[in-house]
Length: 88
Figure 1 (tube, rainbow, N blue to C red):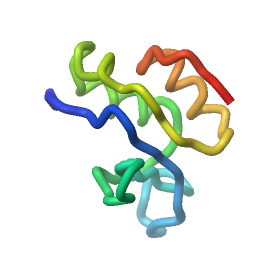
Figure 2 (figure 1 turned 135 degrees about the vertical axis):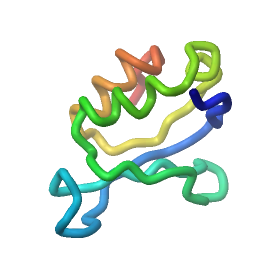
Figure 3 (figure 1 turned 180 degrees about the vertical axis):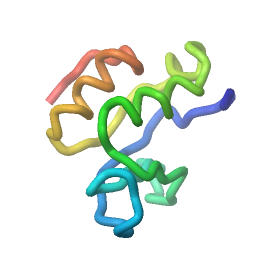
């Protein structure tokens, strides 16, 4: 289980390599300095739920702001796993 997650972060997808499970990979980065925190091979919702479930509920509750594009699985992830009220 991961212990810490930044309270202010961003995520987006990118085309990684042909051998990746999904067509696009996912990168999580610090919202203040743009440093990469982690890369997940697959951006699909089930993969992201599995990834963020590694963090404790307390760690996920520490998240205050997330910067994303409007890719619908990201919105679902935020509501289900990170339990953040969605604001535009």
